Amino acid sequence: MKTDKEKIKDYAKGLFLEVDAEGNKKFTWTEISKAVQKKFKKNVHYSTIAKWAVEYDWHSTYDKIKQAGIQNANLEIQKKENILIDAKANDFAEIYKGRKTLADLSRKHLIAKLTGQLLKINGETLQIDVETKELINILKDSEQVILNLNDKKETPDKKVISPLILVSDENISKLLSENAIL
Image (tube, rainbow, N blue to C red; front, side, top):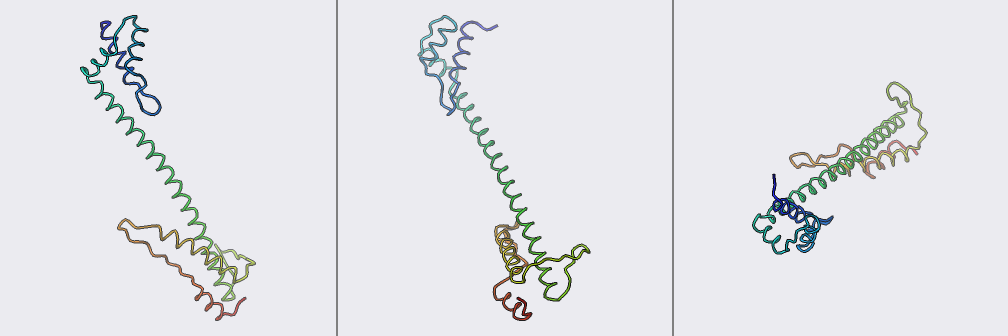
């Protein structure tokens, strides 16, 4: 069983180690002395408590607790950053999928229109009333978004993945003049 002196030391140490929201010590030596006097009805001078802190290495304990708090805060920040990164990656993936689908559909429709065939997707004939120029602009815009996303994506060996689709104003003009559609 602990003696009164040991209980007072433990109580004083607990107050010494207590911190506020900013991580600063919550109590001064004088405040700890007054709290001890109030709780134990014993007058312990603040200099005695300060000597205990040195003698029993409370400062080292405080530093360890502070370091652990910093590490926990950093882990929490990292977790939150990872959640944000995952959410942003999911957003990019959705944009990429949507634009890829739009580009594929536009390309297929454009080819069908240029060759005079019907557009078939999964065996079903699609009738899309879009002008060729508008279709080309949709394709170009979608592919530009895909290119921009691909530019930001690197492989593990740091090589940038080359996009497979290139639509330029020159290619569009050539395509339109050859087929005279508009």
